[in-house]
Image 1 (cartoon, rainbow, N blue to C red):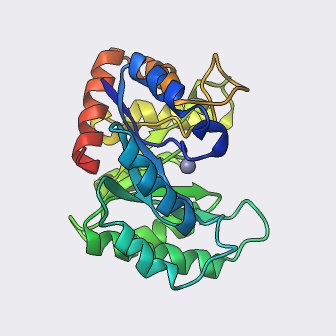
Image 2: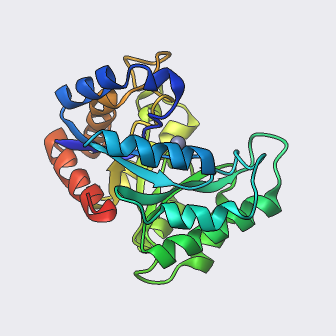
Length: 258
Ligand SMILES: [Zn+2]
């Protein structure tokens, strides 16, 4: 049995088939899925969604590309939601300097406040990074406090040096189905990180509905496809896929208290 630590199952296209998608996930051996929010509104919706399905767990938080309707008053409400049943993390939060226009200053302040919510509530964080490695690493390091800030750098897109820094702070890293794509500069870096990082520092995720692994590239991703990413990572590390699944599942259970 294994865990998809990142699937946006609250999107309308997925919700309308949620029962079939979850039953395919169960058939594929998945027994828990974390559904990260991207805004205050989706945080409310996901906390409700996870009460209806035993295998689902929520992350609440505000994503850096969803700050259009941001209002400072949402942060204490996120902190309240974080105390609800089956909320496993604060996420997904982070920085994104790709989708223009972006407001670096606002992104940084919303991220920093949510890292502080995580420390106060004792929940781990799920971090998003797009073209913002330097600022993200600086902020996480400045908020880091041994034992008090933990979490996952999801869809890891920084280099080997940053991967080592994350691991030194006790964070986990994860790659999506794009690690199965035809090798390019990005995948070579990911290969290098996977080969140089012990399974005890890794998690598995799909990032549903995005980035489906080969052979489903171009389709809508879903948790049942997670094994293809796991197989690729195990192959790169030269270990059995069952061993990778066993260790990463233990990591996810420990980090998210599942
Ligand atoms: Zn995501």
